[in-house]
Length: 520
Image 1 (tube, rainbow, N blue to C red):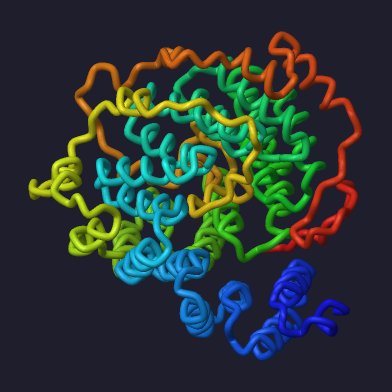
Image 2: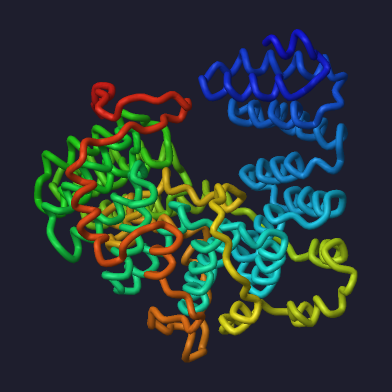
């Protein structure tokens, strides 16, 4: 406040104070600060407009957020964060064409930017235009070779397409770009576990835990691996420690509840599901929890309770195909075929389908590179068909450079949010049995992945031929002894739980009682 009093025309204090108030959930006060800042700077500071737009978006005021993002781009058309933030808002609203237009303007006015290229690449991957996606990922990594998030998002695309060797090479680049990045170690570990490289997956997750001892998701995925390949008792130890690290992390309680259900501990599973819902009953995680609980009650013969739980889950997330079909199957099993068909029809009637088109690509590529003819050949744009997936590891290897040891935040448009993921893909949990079964590493739906006839694509050999030595890397960059990882993990589990940073940014002890469980 003193800075604002002395330099009222400087936008930086308003931005800093507004962010602090936002973290403390004082949203109306933050809004007032941003409004005063825009008035004091005569509307010429794009950073204040952008922060205000993000705040309004967070509060659900989408129309107002659009107006503020627009004001930020008017104040400075080269403010890349405003173009990107606005585009992400439109993507979440299903306005794909508008989002593409905004991203194109960002490149036009600001030049190449890793976050814009990366967002566009993910859009292309989702539309099954894989060669375009690869081209855009390559542009993103050229903009910033240290961008762990770009390498990681690209790796996930190749993993979804079962280009395993290419995916491993990209995972290697991701950890080299940011050796302590928890997302990189987690997603790579889950990838290996899914390919039945259990020891390698366990090793990667353990490394991630060693350098991120307060992250509950790494322990959660380790717990699921241990449950499937070792013992439920060891898994419980890991789940318990993960829940102590962050008692408000819903997916941990959900995955733990699923395990107890599979072990036949029905009452314990119910208690854990209730614990998850007591944290927040309106999130996507809550919807998955309700679906999983519904399956539990269905298998236990409590059909009325199961129906209520499925309905509650759909009230939160009406787009969940799994929940609709699980409910329909319940009715089918009970001989209510008419009701089952009604439920299936309801899903198709209410689902939101976002239609994307290719009309943008010609003008947009003019912005990326004036050599449009060479790009057409690269992307096979003259062919009126989707692109055949092919082995890309040679291209990746040719583009190799030394990885940086600097740690990056890894924050970007990829939206790889392990906080919202159960990480349970490593246990290969059936989607009909657990709402927490979706892979934490997948931003690109497996329904949208392609296949290839290349014999080398599904290469399951851990050695990628890139010359990367994991043991040497963690010894040199992370000061970890590869031969003592298991001992270090065991020791860390015996230590008292450490404190964590909550969403409000305030340090609090982990042993904190949560709200009383809600009754459904």
